[in-house]
Image (cartoon, rainbow, N blue to C red):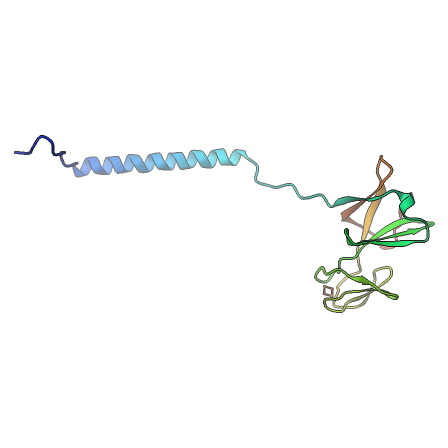
Amino acid sequence: MPKRLEPEPLPRRDFLSLAGLTLTGLAGIGATMGGIRLLKPYVLPERSNRFTIGLPGEFPVGTERILPERNVVVRSTPAGVAVVSLVCTHLGCIVASTDEGFDCPCHGSRFTGEGDVVKGPAPRPLRWLEVWLAPDGKLVVDGGSEVSPGTFFGV
Ligand code: FES
């Protein structure tokens, strides 16, 4: 005769039913959480490559100025302003200005003052970047937008 305080053993069929219900409940919770997660977009917006370099008056005609914080050189001519990237087209090192143009310290690529490749391994010229005048009168550069070499923007 079983004692009154001892729990009755759970029959095998009841145990399997309870286990099945538990697993079904956990699967339902997981599916619900996954569905809720789908409501939130997981595509992160790309960081803008646009940056302001200053007023046109800061770049007098006939001058060339390197902006090390932006890795560009700003060239101002009577034809307008041009911005050339100083990022080497081989593996992205920052080229240094020389008397002849630009040299890459990493693997020895050389570029003319216009950014054309003189010596590899850089596969292509330095990038000329799009620049325009913002409504506030400052020059804005789009580091992600390349223009044809030799393009100057009238300001
Ligand atoms: S990164 Fe400039 S030559 Fe390799």
